[in-house]
Length: 74
Image 1 (tube, rainbow, N blue to C red):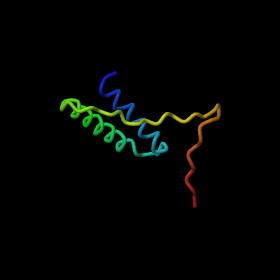
Image 2 (cartoon, rainbow, N blue to C red):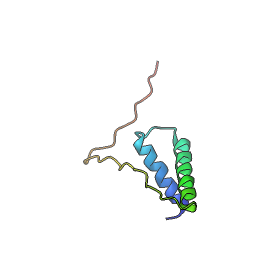
Image 3 (tube, rainbow, N blue to C red):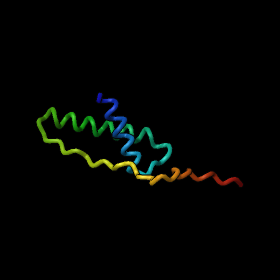
Image 4 (cartoon, rainbow, N blue to C red):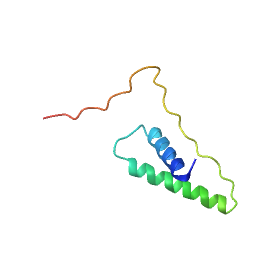
C-alpha cells in the first residue's frame, strides 16, 4: 500500500472514531498526514513506533445505516 493510500485509510479511521461527522474531512486528512509524518520521523531517528489504536467500523447487523437528521424549516 502506498503512502497516500495509508493516509486515506487513517483519515477514514479517524472519521469513524469521531462518529462520522460531516464537513471535517480536511481536519481528518491533516491529522492523518501529521501522524504519518511523525511515524516516518520516528523511524528515521531509529525510534520504536507503537501503532496507533484504530477503531473498527461499526457492525450494522443487517440494518440500514442511520440517516442524517434533516434541517428544520421555519
